[in-house]
Image (cartoon, each protein chain N blue to C red):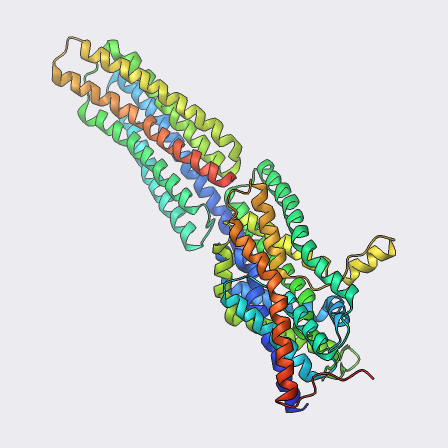
Length: 220
Length: 353
């Protein structure tokens, strides 16, 4: 009886490990697609290619939601990792909110089609690049939390670095926008899009902060 | 078997029940308290392995206890077991984690004093020394084991979920080993005093195997322990699992394994003869306290972490409890024997001519 339940335990564990990995893949993929979609937008506007990327991120978001629910349900139904399941639950939910932010940001580009003067393109793209890097490193930190806990702090450190970079770029960009010869509504509109892109890096940093605590909890 | 014999054996069963209710928590408390193993699974595994350990290798430690004072009359044995069980009950009520080992030793000395039998001082010294050595040894083993296991886990990069699954299996295996060692080491506490006056006769199942009178006695005692585990240990397990210093599941595993190794060392005849045959100093086969072993093991892990979480007042009260228990049991036994002899007219010892 106990033996069969233990064999099932290992089967279940393997399947759940797979789901967590897949969930992290969805987030990492969303960050890459986000970067590509913005590159397309700044090159050619919200064209069909941009819409394809948006649809793809949209699909990834739904799949990630589905995986998140499944992971949470299994952790609690089978009382797995009773010590850390609260932390894992928090981690998965916060990571999921990053995908939501990326998707929301692309939707805003698609719906509002902001008119961004060419002189700001380079900074917007750099901001998107740094934001995506922050998200990718938080994904790596999360993977390390499950398998190689010592490595989690290395990636966390990089998340902090890229978040600071996005802060610098976004401040610089906002100053430039408000110093430009544009009407106030246009300036405010452009500022919102700086914040949409920056938010993903801020969220990644929040997750990294929590992860740092989870790492301490697991190593004490 | 006479009714009076059964009546007198009941105190041993009571003591066995108390041991099952309390000491099963030392083996499975951290696992059940941290929700790594279900209580029902823990209770079944614990019961089965306690019985196996008691019947298969219970004689070694029981023998030393027998040397301390061979209680010659059944009513005397009844009172010794009863006063041990009662003092364990009292101390448990007062919230002090004690063990049947100290209680039964106190009781036997109480009987020795009452009957005018000389206490075998070398056996007594051996037993009391192990009470000091046992928690220290458990602490040492748990420190080494914890360092090794955590270093291994950090290097091996096993997935958190898989570590969890391995830890569950490990806790179950360590618990089974712990229960076996508990049965082997502590059965002597429960029915050891009845050995010289055992009412059983050897029993053979054809030519297949023979259960000696002592093994039958151990089987009955072990069943009483199992009943204690199943009926009353859940609450104590929860207290031990959550009330002591918070342990991670891996820490819990280390604590149980260290506890079990110590109990096993003090009960294994095989190890004793192996050491003796190689000219090495042997480990005395003595009933040691399961509670002392687990407290020592947990303290070992806590010290490794810098000792910040240790509540020294609690540790102090536990240590005082260890000293107080044999004294209380001895006094209860002495007074009880007086009443049994003078009010109920029972022969509590056979005078040595």
